[in-house]
Amino acid sequence: MKRNIIATLFNNQPQAFQAFSELKAYKQTSDTVIVQALLLKKENGVITQIDNHDFDAEISNKALAGGLIGSAVGVLGGPFGMLLGGSLGALFGTQIGATETLGEVGLLYSTVEKMQDGDTVILVLALEKDESTLDAFFGQYDTVTARWDLQAVQDTVADKLKAEIDAQNIEQSAEKAKKAQERADKFNEFKADVQSKLDAFAKKFKS
Image 1 (cartoon, rainbow, N blue to C red):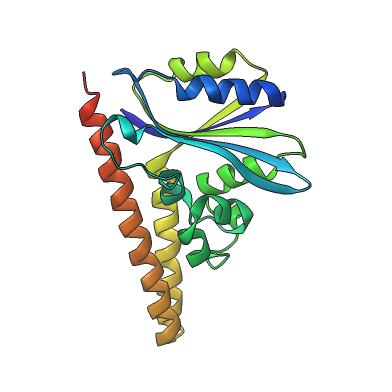
Image 2 (cartoon, rainbow, N blue to C red):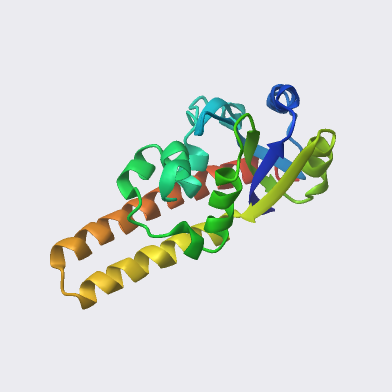
């Protein structure tokens, strides 16, 4: 199953709230497994998290507390990274570099950055054998939906971190290289945690 991050921009705010409410009642299938969903809103130039739902409760008693998507893409620079990343966003800040150079990561960042005041977005982390299920769900509303491969996003971030470490080593800045390595190690820990949780979901709902 593909491991995707899905961003859906709603042109109608009440529809976004309705869709999120319905999404929380989603019944998992062997073709489409939703891991986590976030509801974001932009108001007065600030993007805030309105609600989140962790489907982890279906396989364990330990909730993800809104952190899995952050663990997956939380190393983004700028406000989006700070919002989704929690401790990871604070750890990396803008040190990872311009998001425009980060391939799929940059596309994900740009999608949310282009939100206008009053816009709402639902972010979903899902395992998908068939994309038509969520396409049909969000297609009921006035929306625009985009997908990113989770592994591609994580690989792009990892490559950027490695480049930072190499650059610091070339400059012979031991302290900066050490800090860059610590950031890379921390990201790898989060990445492994994300993968283990997704593996648990995949095993639970494997047909």
